[in-house]
Length: 453
Image (tube, rainbow, N blue to C red):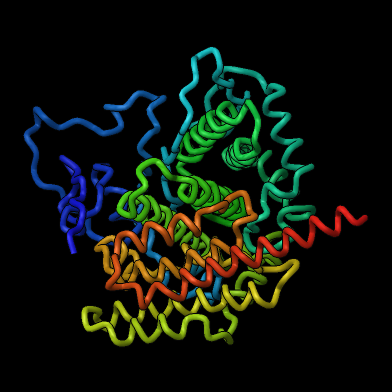
């Protein structure tokens, strides 16, 4: 099968080139090597030609999402928020937080007169904070009110249905006063939600979301924060909401219409979500004594469930019979299949509340590095797993963060793999078609009931 050539980085590290992934060219360690626990090696360059990627872009150029990570963070291979083996609190110590500096994807191009001013927030006793240009304005107040009054903003829950309402959301907002980067990210996500609500201000809200997220990342990185008992809740909430923001942007991406482009963004998103899990593990003893303990314990209970359904039976057969996959590759796929089945079980058993669609978000955090390697290498079996994930997305198509992403992903996978993979793709294709028909029937019944009353 002919494959599209990958657009290589001109000055990328040798590790990314060998993996055929796009390097962000950050030195001394690039983003993907840091987040995927790989040694980052650069070839020697002519000193006259060396330029910093960050210095080549103006502050307003955020069309290519990039992140920095100053410190190496090892990603555990067990499930999300599973209790790690920690003998005492001192074993945790402090942990450098990821320097996620400029991951912004702005889809709007506004005139300077349309740009919204940042919030005025001064922290004189904390290093890295500087006076910000404008005072708190009504645009920002609108976003806070929207967070408090529209429970749909966090409809794809961050670990517990209670997070979308009090007391969960109140924890985030109160901590936002203590950690401004968290408050900015909350406002950015509120603005992103408003951008998805049809109105003549959608582009303005989208640009505002990117601007606020940029400020959040700038403040976060300027702090040089280490994760400890005093800030673990703020750092984890910030990283989690940022991850949800990035997932929403990734699932909404349609510009190229190609599987290669989507997988590149999706793999980057997985790498960042894995960093969120690393933060949780680093601060586990502290988090279990914090206000987030109920959320984290509930998440642990969910991801530790024993799968009961048989939705992934054919998928498991494919992986076990794949001669091109090594044992480590197969084990990574088995892990992802297990969590897919937990997600399918939740869809069929938790019809109203709970964790019905939580695996849409969690699946990215749970992905081991070997699985992202398979996606990056364009391994067909990994794409079939992604097609099954598209089923979960389609079940959650009513969520504003998801929309028609499931339909889009299954379509581009079928087009890419071709007819020789039809046998393995029939199940996700038919399941998505059936769910679409069932949805039309449900909508028709609901409409008739409304008319009759």
